[in-house]
Length: 261
Image (tube, rainbow, N blue to C red; front, top):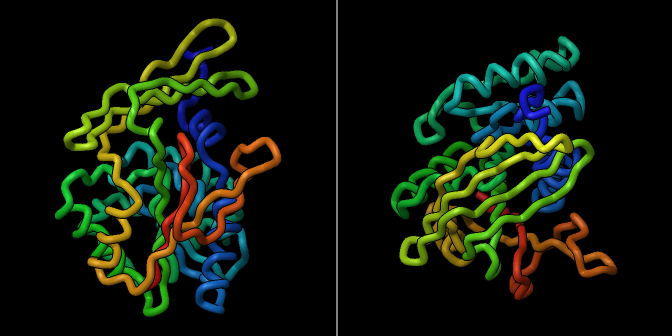
């Protein structure tokens, strides 16, 4: 089963929920700015599923996807963009480039999700990236980032989640407390016992919420708000995120950080 599996399909099924993300992006943008966002840029876009979902809102919506990996962009073109109606395909632009140097039109809304921007481990480099994000936004534009934290995020550990036809394993293989450098992997395991080890590999710095808020304000953003996930009746995350200036002392949490130009 591992030999026949497509790692990008597995990733999207286990990690992403682009329908909910577009709903959150648009609803939050409208609440903050009082208008609808039309032009969207997805940094570290990978297969560009989020960009494709964005243009599905209607004929007036456009998306730009930026990624440095040509192979994953090509997969996205063949397996995601190609599924769109022809008129929708024309409104998705995929760019092979470094997000630190890419030049795009100013957008309403820019997002870097799945902690991809944590690849910038040095403070000066992260600040440079956030400043470029600020410059890439229209005058009332918003930057959306996600982040995770809690005591468990500082551990070397594995977490297994079962899905239909496979198991997803998040592996925090190494963590260095002095630098907050972490090496993480995603593995997949199948019912026949076959495995895809290290299907995805991430070398990151675990950035904390106060660090990111300070950096975003230093980069020029006028207001930075953390959106914290609510809980269901069992105390588990319910997928609904609202502004919160304190958060909860959970063992593990995921949040969004929304910055206004």
